Image (cartoon, rainbow, N blue to C red; front, side, top):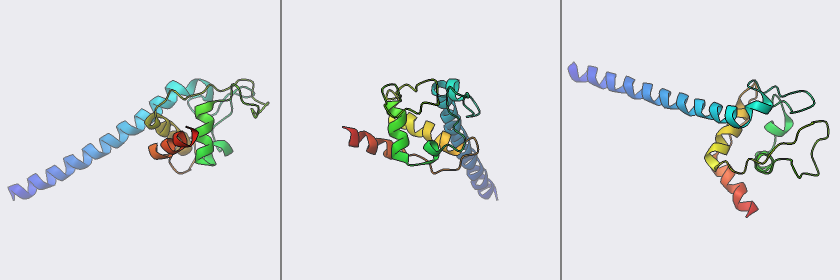
Length: 132
């Protein structure tokens, strides 16, 4: 009986650690978003009218993964395709590593009521390879 209880406790502790690690990973993505994107796009993803676009139900956010990765890496500072309705340009976030980029982009694709597939570290790495 003692060994059975130990096994049950071990399983419960292991499950709790797994959930705890998942929450930490999720918090890290939110923290990365807050640090890098939140000032302009706001904590709720609502953006600022005529300055920064909202991320809620955004075609760019929910659309093609590769295009979103490229867009965030390159920003719009020198982009001839910048949407003129937005007053501010977006800086390039090419200083983020592929893990940070995948976490932020997955966060915005799955937060604020968005329900798009995640962007993996490999997705980011593939775009980086294409650009080099």
